[in-house]
Length: 293
Image 1 (cartoon, rainbow, N blue to C red):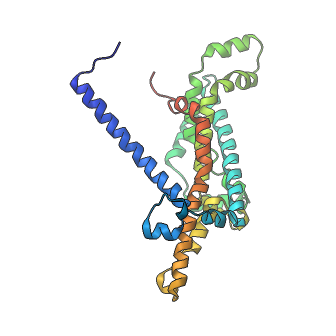
Image 2: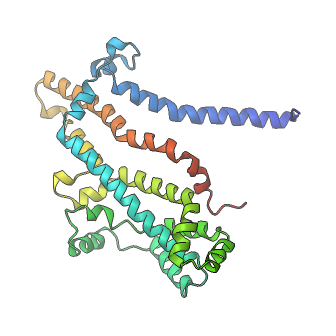
Image 3: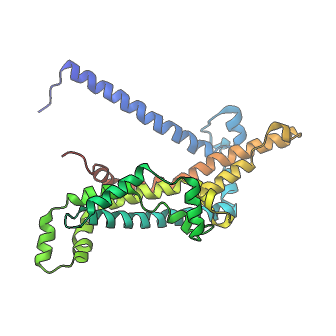
């Protein structure tokens, strides 16, 4: 049976549809522009704008990017840093959240208070740098993975999720003689896929887009992640007009910079675009942790 809507309800539905259409266009149009621009000849793009004629397209930008050893090395470094960081931070968050969700843990309110305090008060950049240096992690992969591995917000999300797991399951496992570790790994963890995958996605995306920590802690260019390599390439291909007297050289430099820019954006965004469809079925339930039912 069809639902009858009042005139005001129909107005709200139309307004909502228009709003969602504008929101989708604001997301899709820039994405399409970047993808199409990455395949275009930079000269045509600069002079005429976007063109959907195949004769105006070129793979030169991708060839330049992929033929650069630093790009491939940076891509591999970013994959390793992001995957390792996601593994460590999810492990810490899930284990801490599970422990804090158990009312039998002595002093759990004190631990939670200390965790929350760190969300509002921190030592700052210089003390953090000195700490990383004293721990001997400068110019190592650990400087990227370890300092940010403990995320209090993720711990709170995990704690909230585990509180929603029925206690009857744990009690039944205790009756069957299961240990605390057995209850966690065999019962609770398999039921926690939504929060685990959402935390892993957040951690991977955050680390993938990060470059500041690598710029501060890593001096060896062979350890630089992709974002730092892209930053170096784009800066090296930019110059003030007064620095180059030859106009042809200036035009070629501008063309090269434009060609690399869009291709680099597509390559650096590709892993994230590939990951989202696989995490989508867990994403909605995971991000609703703590909401009212």
